[in-house]
Length: 241
Image (cartoon, rainbow, N blue to C red):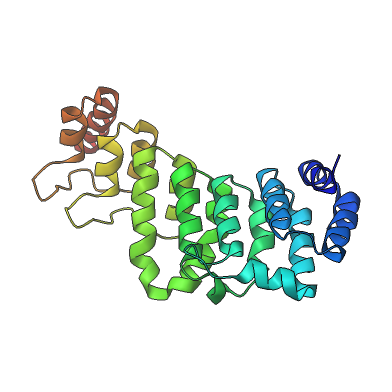
């Protein structure tokens, strides 16, 4: 069995002692740096934050590895690519370690791409970790980016991500270019749980799109009858209240 195989198994198990020994040996032998990428990927998949931290530490002390991990490509750099992977797998310990690898500016738009991966996959823990970084990187422009991500989460039915974004004070009544609110997106896709959640957060029930449709219209026209029933019940309570 090769050192590479041993390394990947150690990364999978989270065996720090074996990992540290093998990583040092591979660096001493000038092994292919792609081995480090692969080991990092395995550690991320298994959310072994300490292993990720160790590879980050080695990169900080080895110029050849540091240059490899920071090399620009179409996706930014290797740290950014791995952060996006951590967000997709909801590997929050790994993502936290990766955020320590570079300054926020070094990630560029990779922070947003990573957050988008978390929101799209319904990974609430990773999304919660990344929100402050997105807001810090974006500044005032996060006011348009985060609601767009929230609309995707609402349409996909990722209730935990929706709740996290609403707690981050993203407007529940944000409206997109076509007049669709978050409630419209959730209703059209039949996401009854998210619809209830948005209504609890005081979403406007009767808001209309540019085409004049309410959330109830979209749910009904899309054949989302269970969601339409939720909206009707809520409207009835509103009228009797």
